[in-house]
Amino acid sequence: MITRFDRVAVDLPIPAAPNPNGASVVQELLGGKFGEMSTLMNYTFQTMNFRDKDAKAARPFYDLIANIAAEEHNHIEAVTYTINLLLTGATERGTDPSAVPLRGVENDRNILHFVASGQTALPIDSMGRPWTGDNVFSSGNLKLDLLHNFFLECGARANKIRVYETTDDPTVRAMTGYLLVRGGVHVVAYARALEVLTGADLRPLFPIPDISNQKFPEAKVLEDAGLHRILYRNNPEDFARVGEIWKGPHPEDGSELVVEDGRPEEFAPPVLEAEPQLTAPGIGAVDDAMLAEIVKRLEAKSIFTTS
Ligand code: MN3
Image (tube, rainbow, N blue to C red):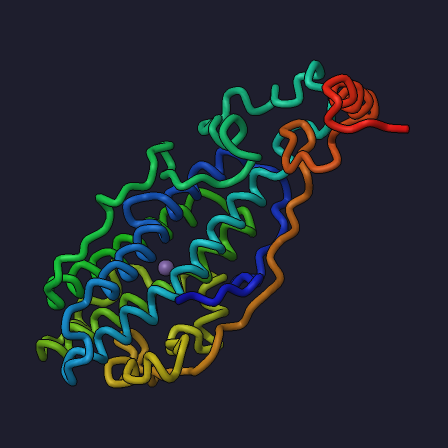
């Protein structure tokens, strides 16, 4: 079961200007093959499908994957709010459709943001392809699933780095900086899990790709505060044994890995104003003349009468 809080894990600044094409690029981090929808669904299915999870040797791995799955929900929210903030203000606000309020977005890369949604995110990648269950790998073999998850998190890291490199927009940089750090925790977690399971030493592989989070100012500030060393234990009772894997030195800077009970720092989600030209949300948008017309029709049908 998931308990949901109306909070977001990143303090997202408001973009300096709307950037619909930037929003299309960021979609890769949401609905792409290596996006946050993929990490969430991979770990969720792998834990629901985990056989013999209460076996003494299996339980720490189950706890780790389940606990990471819970954090991935935060990451979907962070990416989605970033997309929504970049799309806000991209069209002309107003209630007159003949004023061509969507003229400005005709040539944007992803017109679905305006035609199929209320100028908001969709479960698609940067090229508009829908997210698919083909992105979920849940083989039932723990070593194979952990290897896959390590690869998935490294692939996700590569995508975040490249999206970061497309823009100097502060919202995109705050989000990717945060996710480089937290996704980095998950790369280390799956490497540690493989080390505990097999005795292999994966430390020489770090970092993949070959660039440190310290090169990204928005990630550096969080790592300097120690955020790359902490695994937040979503539920200390149910996921008690994550600390049997999340321990020892961090493979990049040697700092001590620590389990922290409770939720990460949290912020109020951004406020998304109405976009009346898209009737989003369309509450209170009915004008007086239309309302009078509806009343007249209802009266004619004798559904109700006014005295
Ligand atoms: Mn993630």
